[in-house]
Image (tube, rainbow, N blue to C red; front, side, top):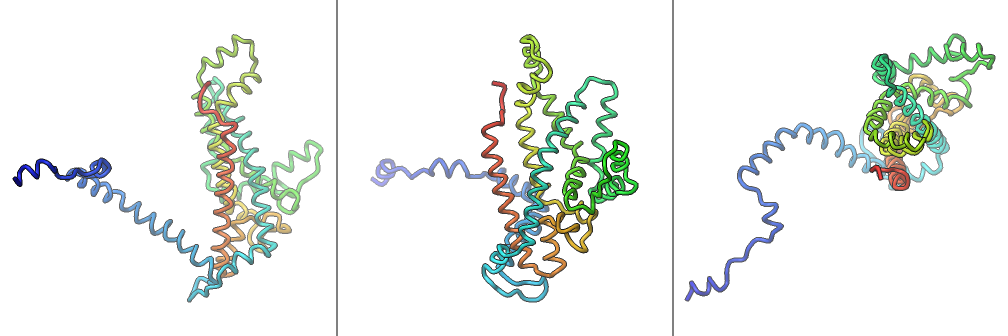
Length: 319
């Protein structure tokens, strides 16, 4: 009787989801070995990224000097941001620089990539020369740039004088100081140019052959084939340039110094140097943490806007 009852009512089976994620002995062993091998990365991620990420949220709501105990003050740091003129100045300077440096960088990188793609025997040498400045440390390149743009003996100003143009005080005139930083950013365009070059090599050649049969010229082929097919690479460069532009620090610190910060006339007071001064110069770690979180949110919003906007002009196929 008991056997018949058991046969009539079989034991319930585990749902498909449970069977899907069930691990056997070998799989558990492989998982343990995998976690062991990546444990240095896990420790580094928790200690140097996740914990600071959470800790800055906590101290952004406190008055904290970096030493001793912190004093909870609620939203006071964020309210102070709205009344801080230097915060708005640094934000404007950073967005102005980023908004100018990114499109100029895309144009320069595209031009260099097109030059690198020419079928000439000297092209490998040119590629090495154009890429070399991008591997030089930012502080070293900034020192070289100071010599190039020196108002008295710099090569740039000597060329301007030779063309009959006026001498420019690149580092002392508030009207051109941010432009000098934009010019400096183009010295690292060789790295982006190699990525653009890889994108150019990935464009199917039959598209150009078909365009030639239709009588398209060089400019028409660039507008109708090269540029649309390069839009994914351009999107990548926009996101990378946004991250680098928003966080500009080393170049400003080396060229313009930090005493007084933002010289001349606060025209180079960028966001990250202002955050650095509040945290490590004025010992206002709580306020600096609030600045860091606002910067994170601004970067996130701009990245989302670029991605949403990219759906209108980025092409991922050849149709």
